[in-house]
Image (cartoon, rainbow, N blue to C red):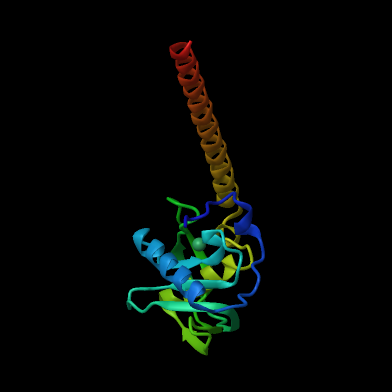
Length: 189
Ligand SMILES: [Zn+2]
């Protein structure tokens, strides 16, 4: 399991509902939770682990692990507030984003039981940020247009560099393999 990065198609897709909440799904949630904690995240959504289904995990400073499956936002407050957001899929970048202060959300928990949560503060912020991921929306889409363009370009270049490095590595491995094969043939002849 790995975290997908801006530029990957899955982050821009509309995720599909979760159909089976079973032991396999729960085991996957445990792995995802561990990945989130290891990377110091407070929220992680399906598309961020290359799984285009509608679910996310949040754990804010109250230390409660909250799982939201097939969530629906029911209400958002008219009052908005700014908050600096970051995203594990856009590492190293932060931007102040204005969103509704409070939110009411309905979802299924990891046992398939329905619950309603009224959230404010950082929890309300995380809920909206993660829920956006399920619709292929990233926080940079809700901020300054110039910042958004700059970040998209930066990550495009980053992806190209990664691809080039990978190709160079593979070419080198091929050359070495060819040398070894040639040396073996020589030894045999
Ligand atoms: Zn995010």
